[in-house]
Image 1 (cartoon, one colour):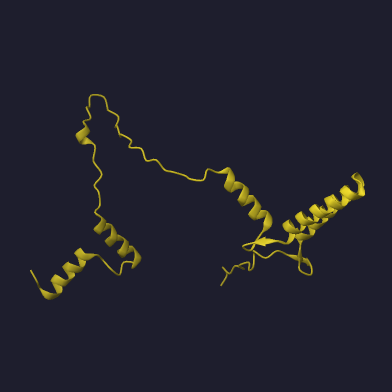
Image 2 (cartoon, one colour):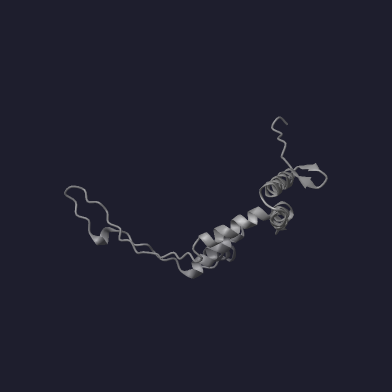
Length: 154
């Protein structure tokens, strides 16, 4: 068995660096602490307290809160992208006339262009049944022919 490969397990789990804290959470907490330090150096005490509360809320939200099992920043990016895209996408089918190019000395008539045949809905449901059963069901036409052969009905 030379062709054995190791398949990685649990690739959606983040590495823990200290207790339940992951690398991403640790970095976000460090960045939040840096912003608190900047607020301490650049503002007076009452403004510092107000800014610290806001920074702690946003840091905790982005570092520890999960929405449907995904980190909050993934949810926030998806939420923003939802509002950037149009809410309804409508496909407007246009009928395009097919024109073949003429060769020199050849006239192409509209009658020469083959028309698409429309498959009846009964045949479509029969085809989907054949696909769903993996070929075990072979269709009514073949089933009738097999029955006629087995019972010698002509």
